[in-house]
Image 1: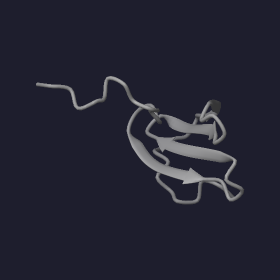
Image 2: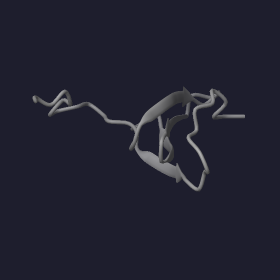
Image 3: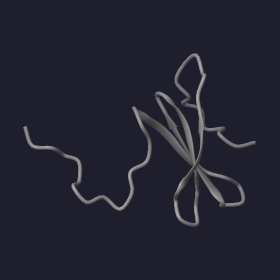
Image 4: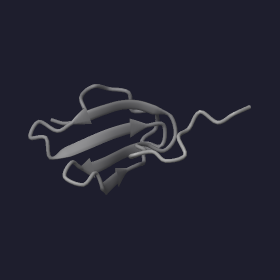
Length: 66
């Protein structure tokens, strides 16, 4: 079966199953909610700046920022 994943992606977000992507209210961060945690990226270079784990279940909520 051929792969459906690009061999030269611009950027891949999320490890595990992807559930939600949300920008912070100020636009400086992007939160990517997955089946194994939440990745937090800066939006200037889209580099990973944080990874939140330890949840008991998937994070599928729309309210990733408060």
